[in-house]
Image 1 (spheres, rainbow, N blue to C red):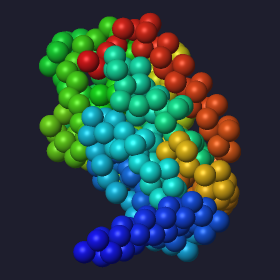
Image 2: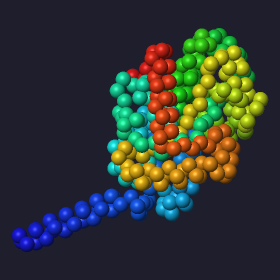
Image 3: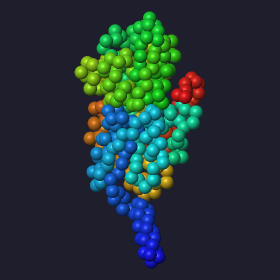
Image 4: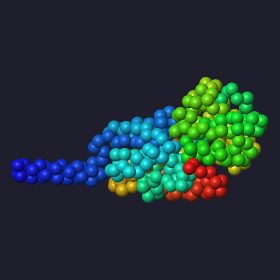
Length: 326
């Protein structure tokens, strides 16, 4: 029995050593499927971008890439999952501006530190935000919407694709700048927010164009403004918020691919090269453009600096306005 126990212990140590050796061999990466976690439900912009990237990354790595949706708390739950994952390149995150930069300032205690718990791989896309209303609402411009909200204070409702999103901040800033009030209804992502907006459960929403483009084309939602610095090529007749009388009110959410801190440099370099290459192709640029997004690419160092600067920018906005999520 003693010899058998000793043999078993040796086998356990051998297997453990073998697993560790496999995990510590970044030159062989990847030897099994790679998982991309999207911290939001299906149907939203984050999901659309992640699946486009995952499909092409699978071909580039010659290994299956699985997209898994882990929604909740405006992206904080899924993002935290990746922050605590093994840093071996097999669990990645398609994060967005809200969960990575806004949420850490909106909450008094963030569940992770983006600049310490992750290694950014590359930016993926920036996205056009549209102020859209349900067709039942008799407003065809920002001016008409503001007038309607003043006549019916607190009676209109806006769907928020997350309490810690850029859209949340934009909604609050819009209300303050316009001197109006309406009810915020928060959802765990753009997909669920879009479903209720299309169904007429809410009157309006600041929501990403890729999420609602098909419903705009079908006449089931009416765009009355875009939040970018310039008009969208897909909505050339829709004015910006600045053109609508609200100067300085601009915002553009974005997505980035990240991996847990501690991931071997060789794996980060491999992923960065593959992702930057695919995001620069005419195919990906067209795919993103057709959805109302711009394909982006950046080095890990440049992505880190971008996220750092975005965090500081939105932290100042949140401090100045006093907006909180808890």
